[in-house]
Amino acid sequence: MTAKARKPVLLRLDPAVHDALARWAADELRSANAQIEFLLRRALAQAGRLPDDVGGLPKRGRPAKDARNADTGPDDTPTETHEETP
Image (cartoon, rainbow, N blue to C red; front, side):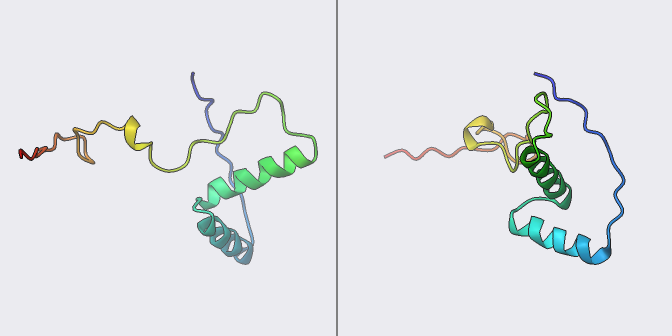
């Protein structure tokens, strides 16, 4: 599945509105940009104006532990594994 390209948008906000938005985003562990998109999608859905073909929100956070290769470190270099023998 290929993801649709994200459209960059310049948004001018009152600094106090931006600060409040950034605090709210931090409370929900989102970036300010992700919070804006979340709120716009919710408003569109509530108004019945969210298109049927809109893609989902990007996944948040790190990939699941089982999805990562257990034999590599954070920079994808091999790590040593130490097995204990009884």
